[in-house]
Structure formats: structure tokens, C-alpha cells
Image (tube, rainbow over the protein chains, first blue to last red):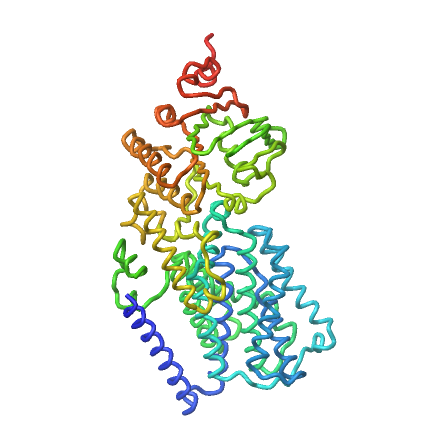
Amino acid sequence: MKALGLKKNLAITAVLVALYFAIAYAIKINLINPFQQVNLIWMGINIILAVSLNVIVGFTGQLALGHAGFMAIGAYVSTVLTMNMGLPFFFAIVLGALAACFVGLLIGLPTLRLRGDYLAIATLGFGEIIRGLLVNIDYVGGAAGINGIPKLTNWPWLFAFTVASVLLIKNFIDSTHGRACIAIRENEIAADVMGINTTRYKVMAFSVGAFFAGIAGGLYAHYFYLIRPATFTFMRSFDALVMVVFGGLGSITGSVIAAAAVTILNATLQSLGAIRMVIYAALLVVVMIFRPQGLLGTKEFTLRTLLGKKEGVGKDAYRKQAD
Amino acid sequence: MLIVNRLTKTFGGLTAVSNVDLEIKEGELIGLIGPNGAGKTTVFNLLTGVYLPSSGEMAFEGKSLARLKPYQITARGVSRTFQNIRLFSTMTVLDNVKVAYHWHDRYSVANAFLRLPGYFRGEKKTTRAAMELLEVFGLAQKAEELAKNLPYGEQRHLEIARALAANPRLLLLDEPAAGMNPQETQELMDLIAQIRQQFNLTILLIEHDMSLVMKICERIYVLDYGKVIAEGVPAEIKQNPRVIEAYLGREA
């Protein structure tokens, strides 16, 4: 089995490396022009946002609507670190993410005692508080925000951060800690009675989601030159939520595909102006009617499904896992 | 092992459980019976921390359980099944069981994120232990199926397997035979006897199936309107006029 797992990892690595160089080459020969590059950057950012929000909403089952708040913290902290403190890009992004993670922890402890719609409203309020605070902090430019941010986010960094984020989240979900989160979604009382400290795991999922949203924020700030509190409104959280629901609550690959699809859709419909939102909304309605569980539901898109092989069932599958 | 003293739970004006005393010694298999709505499941919910008691005391192995959260009570060595099955339905059978190993057998978050050797060691160990447990319940063949796709009887078995994975010394079974036919009930009785031996368990069980209760329980508590109305060995309980009255009503 180890050989088979290795083969699979090698195959995925090969695909990723090929993807990286293909796009790098396309950028070099201007097949992907600067306008399309913006969409490429958005795709990476959206993938990180959707996958990280899925940890909270899809896997742990906690409806949180404050994701833009964490993104804002990552964006502002990393920007201050690169512009005012002269820190290298990588460290600034990671520290920005840690700041978002820390705030996630602080916010999570009181709010995650709430359930369902109450939690949604509380986290929505939190997102707005972050924005309100930023407007009132002169050090970060108040409502005008910060401009002249160095353009440090490029394709290699974007690719590395996106792939790393998705992989780390996948590792977390596929571990005993991820199982604890999913158990909470499935049946909170049973999870608690089976020995899982449900508050601890909800807060953990929340902080993990916040950390990666912080990365997305840092990448955003260092590409788009300007950040303002108005960049991180509720609509941004909502967009991320749409991608998560669209791809399937509890499917990492679903979130990746949905984030990419929504980004492309947005870019293609751009020329249509106001009618764009109508088409976008109509598509969402159609998806929800015909596939309420999202594109992939809780399933994952694997090479196996691509090749049309049936997933192993029963003892053999277990043996593969245990040996 | 378990001592419950004047345990009471009120919901608003309704007293669901009133001054209940129980005493269970190590290794016993005790039945808790009573008509519908007598408060049996509420007693279980109190014992496992799902509800907080309104008053009264309960102690397991000398330590109070009264203000603990469910996961803390599990860590003391008490585990349970649910009357209305509460499996993690879209998780696999194997993962359902593995969740219960989490509290006593896990690796660090860093191991999980970075897939360090600890992750592989931990997963391998838990998977092996969980599969051995599933083998006992005849569910090993279905390890990779989703819990919700199991037939009803097997879902009940999986609940017991999951409860055992939490490593209890006291196991609470809430109507394990509900909805089973006589043959399945017989198999369940054998299974309970087997796991009791194998895992060195003390068992408290709620059951409506009198034949099961009378056959396997060493002592029985009878609950009616939240109060213990009788306690004793099965033969005594069968004769007890108050029990007969609670179940069949008073003669006109």
C-alpha cells in the first residue's frame, strides 16, 4: 500500500509541477496578459478563502459569516510589516496570518458557545467590528486605507501559498483532529459524549480557518496596491460562503473547483456590467435546485474518481489503510 | 463504583427525575426499567453530563460527576449509547469508532498538519484497534461504508462499538434492543455478555424488552414518574405489586 500511496503522491506532485510551469510559461509569453493575471491572483485568493471557510462551515458545521474580518487582519498586519517594519514578504504574510488566527481564538471563545443562526449573526457582527475599528485607526489610514503597497505577490508566491494552504488544511481534516471537527458537525451531543471537547475543537477550527483567511488577505494586499476597510465588507465573507456551498459543504476539492469556477465566471461576465450579478445569482439558484449538496457534496474529487474506478469497500480498503 | 444520591432534574415545573438513588458495584449488570416517560433516559443524560442535575449528587469511583461536561465524564470512564441512534452518519463505520479513540489516544496538531511520523504511527494504531473492535461486532467487513447506510440492527451494534472505543469502565446502554426481533435480541444478549467479560465492564442498561432484562440483569431498578419505586433481583421485581401496577395499572 505504501507504494500505491507514494505513486498517488508522485502523480499529484507531477500534476502540480506541470501546472506551475505551464502557467509560468503562459505568463512569460503573454498568453496570460496582465488583465487575466489579476484573475489568476483572485483565483488563488478565492481558493484559500473558500477552503479555509469550509473548515469552519463545511467540516465543523459552524455557520460563520466573518471571514472577511480575518482576511482584513491578515492584509493590514502583513502590509504594516512589509511597509513600516521592512520585514520580508514571506514572514509578513505568516505573521499576518498568525494575527488573524489569534483574533480568531479570541472571538471564537465567546461566540462559539452560540449555535446556528446566533453564531452567524455574532460572527457577522464581528466582521463589521473589525472594519469599524480599521476605519478609526489613523495609523493604518482610517477610511482611506493604505496605498502604495509593494506588489510582492507574484505567481510563484501565490502558487506556493495556495498549494501549501490546501495541503495543510487537507492534512488537518484527514487527522484525528479533523475527525473530531466532523463528528461535531454530524452530532454534537454524541461527539461530546464520545470524549471530544466540542468548544475546544470549534475554536480550533475557527482559528485554523482564520489563519488561512489571513494568508489570503496578505496575498491580496500585496497585489492590489491599495487596501481600505471597504474592501473587506460582509459581501466578501458572503462570496466565500457562496463558493463553499457551491462546491459542497465538507469537500476540499469541491471548494477548490468552486472557487476557480466562480472566479472565471466573474471574469467572463465582467463585460456584461450590471446584468452580471443577475446571471450569477440565477446560476446559484439553479445549482441549489438541482444539486443542493453542492457540486461534490461531502465527497472528494480524486484521481480514482477521474479514472472511474469504484472506491474500495470493506476489508481490503481497510487493509490498504492499515498496512 | 457508581453512587447516585437524591438526584433530581426539573424542567420548568416538570420534575423528570426526583430523588433517585442508585448504587452500582463494579462488575454488575444492572437494569433500569419503567414505563414510557418514567425518566430513564433523563437519568442517563444526567449521568453523562448532557443535562446538569437540579440537585443531588452522583459519584463515580469516589469522584463527583455532578458539574462535569460530557467529555470530562467520558474521560473518567463512563460511556453510553443513545436510544435514538446518534451515529456520525456521513462518516464511515471505521471513522465513527476512531472518533471515540480521540480523547485517550491522539497525536499532536503539529503531527496532523505536517504529517510527521507521529501521524502515521497514531493513525495506524487507532485503525488497528478500531478494526479489532469492529471484528467483535461483526462489522469489520463494512468498515468503509457510511454509518447511515448500515441496516438498523447494525447501527445499534456500531453505537455499542463506538461507546466501547471510548474505553469505559461503566457502560450505559439505552434500549439496545429497541426495534429488534426476538432472534436479534438473543444475539444482542450474547454479545453483551461477551463484551462484559472481554472488556471487564460494569453495565447499566435501559430496556423495554422484559425477557431480556429479566434474563441478563443481576439487579433491577424500576422508575415511575421520575421516582425509584422498586429495586431488587429480577424474581423480586416480577412479584412486586407496585411494579405490576406501574406497568399494567390498578385493578378497578
